Image (cartoon, rainbow, N blue to C red; front, side, top):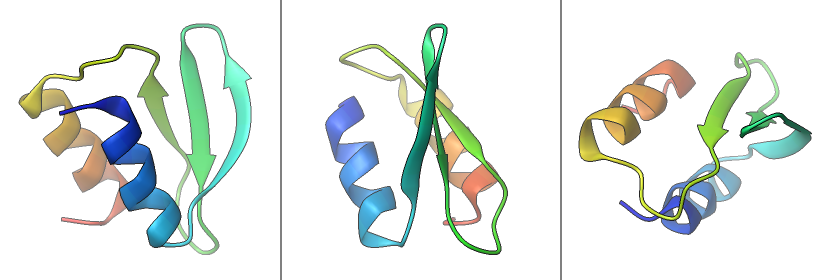
Length: 58
């Protein structure tokens, strides 16, 4: 999965960028926990699935 597709999905669900931290970007939505996105063009399907699960979107 492309990183930008994952970010578009989050922004459509109310997430906003909090900060860039090292090799990750941190996003948070109101009433949800913060999640990290690695800064790679491609993110493996397993990693993307876990990030979405952590974000409460799947």
